[in-house]
Figure 1: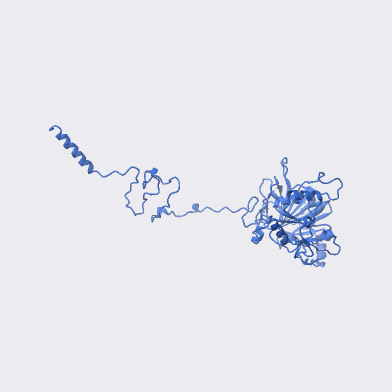
Figure 2: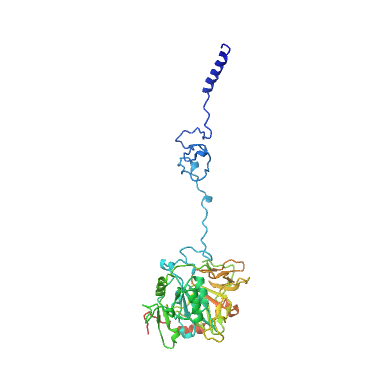
Length: 451
């Protein structure tokens, strides 16, 4: 026992010495000399126990959401913003693939109101031959107009309305094969007076609810104030050229059929800036369809518009009494084909198929010209598929989009550029100007005029 007493005394003294040492921080706990309540980092009770237990600090980037950190008075928690913290916003493109919600893809301009934003593109067929049908009514309020050969060098207009609502349009004529492409390209409703049996069959097979016409039973009355269609005869005008229509009531028909929806068609790209580094000056462009129909457009710097002449005479719109105008004139070359599978040889109702698409086996593009702001830009057009809402893409040889001036566009479809002549100098139209000066502007056609 006396031998064990010294060893026992040594153990007791060692235990007393350990109790006098400072305590070691707990494993995983964030050790700090900053008292609680100051501006230092404090244990986060929201951290999971796997991070070292409730209240233990594990990492500055915990997995998953954590509690919002408490703001402190220390400047290191509120860094001063610099230029790199606020990136420059990327401008929203104006086509050809996307457009801001409030921008009309037909014009590159904002919709004039919510109504125009929400309604369908209305494609109205309008006569342009014989000359007695001129002046037409309502064309200057269309967003886009296509002019193409109906048959034998005679052209017809397909006017697409969205932004504006003319009280009257016309004269309204029959549908053609190309109108099916326009309905697909612009997701539009077609307004027409009638058509041949083979084409009508195709219309009904493909677009039974997107057709608006008295030919399928839509109302026709004595006036166009109360009816979507009416006959407005005048001396020297053949019966087939006397049909006119009320676009607002046509949109009402589309609403009843569930097709009055404001789809956008992609394809056109717009820029208000003029590209002066490419293109060449052009103030006059003449387009000829085999001597049967022609169109001349001259650039007017005062209004920054292209003004139209037909058969050497200023071409008016009877709706507003103004010369027909456009912000852009586009000319495209397209294949024109006969359809013997639809029309027998010698049929007097034959309709050409104008190909507004690129066949899969074609590894080239067809030519296109863009006239804007007194200049001409040479490029190509493309439409690699026939999807709904895919219209024409206008591109340069490097596949960069050709930029249209925001506004109204007139598209002329030809068989070849040999039918198109453009110059920097304007053709001398002094004689025409004298004739126009002696001729009063057309009296606007009254929507209430009847038989």
